[in-house]
Each structure stands twice: as C-alpha cells, then as structure tokens.
Length: 265
Image 1: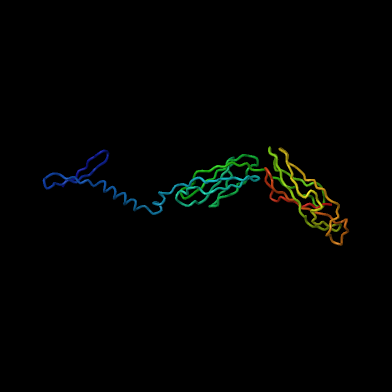
Image 2: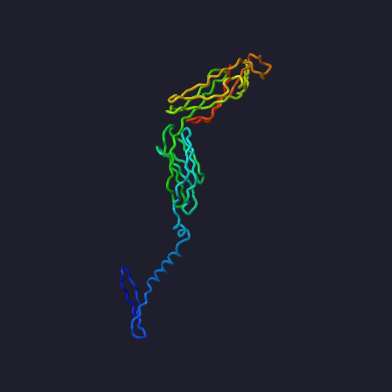
C-alpha cells in the first residue's frame, strides 16, 4: 500500500493506495470525514458557558419611551425591548444630552433625571443591557419646567400671598389654589385659630404672563370675629388663620412643599 498527497482545487487530499485483486489502485479519501471528527472534538471541548454565549446577542431598544417634565429634571419611563437577545435584561441606562446627566436601574422601567436646566430642550436616550452588553438606544425629547412656589407668609401679619416662578418663560404659567383651616397659635395678647371661612376667595387660579416671575393672591379677610378661641381672650383678640395650597400647575412644576400657613391680624 502507498500513501500520497494531492492538491485539488486549493485543498490537500491524502489518499491511501493499495493494489486491488486485478492489480489496479484503489484510492481511499478520508480527509473530509477526519475534518468532521476534528470539528466535533473542538465543539465538545468548549465549556458550556462559552457554547451558550455563542448564541447571545445584545438586547433590542426599549419601547414606548416617555418623559414627563419636572422642575430641573424629568421622569423617564419605558417598556422592555421586544428582544432580550437570548439572555435576561440586567439593567437600563438613561442619559440626557447637554451635560450627560444619567440615571440607571437594575430592571425597573422608570427613573428620574435631575440636574437639568429648566426651559432647555433635551434629547434623552434609554438603553437596555444584558450579558452581551448595551443595546441600541431609544430616544425621547423633554423640556424641564420652571417651578412655581408660595412665599411663606410672615406669622401674625396680613396681606397678599406671594408666589414666585423659578425663571421666566415664553409660555403662560398658571396654578390653582385652595384654602383650608390654618394653624393655631396663642400668645399673651391674642390667639389664632383655623378659620378658612374668614378668607375670600377660598379658591382660584393664579396666572404668570410670559416673562413674569412673581404674582400674588389678594385675600379679603372678614373682621376677627371667629369663634372657638379660649375664654381667656376677648373676642377682639381672636384671629383667623388659613393654609393656602397650590395644585394643578400648567407649564410649570410645583415646589417640594406647595403650601403655606398664614396668620392674620
């Protein structure tokens, strides 16, 4: 038997030749079968984790991305990608343009961006990640809102209630207000009790024109004839108090404590 190697169409083929009964040569080609055995042997040698990772892809982009403007920030919400890439989502990252403020989660589909400039348009990108890495981004735009706040009334004094807007804006800003019974207080010359009914109006809307940053609520206060004071004080030393609460802002956000207490004399 003889062995020879030939180069056929760019590949080497090894042949074993042996005489046949009639004296002719029979060629046995075995390289393709040997190659298949080698491939199977290499695959069997891969660790299970590496073999599994071969089919993993990065996740798709999050879906249904929305951003709700806040003062100096935005709440961003989304839904999971249509494809997780063949392995569970491990987290999400949210990044804003113009400074790169970020927030991240380990699976929740909402987070809050802070440190943004009111009135500036931002593009927000949301990405999902898995064991393979970060997937493509989904985008949404948002403009943080100015903040409307009450100016705390000076205790034991009357007058209009002040409101402020954190910065001027080209839009008209409005906010509703309501009154409720205020706090009680007593000093040696008089006493204050909650009596929102002594204040008019009891509700309404305050409007900031474009560019305006201050506004007031002008209350009419009935004479101090409220009831419920201690008998140690004469009726003329019994005064009403009120709590003013803001709600339902338009083109603005509310301060962290959108109410204030007023004690009138």
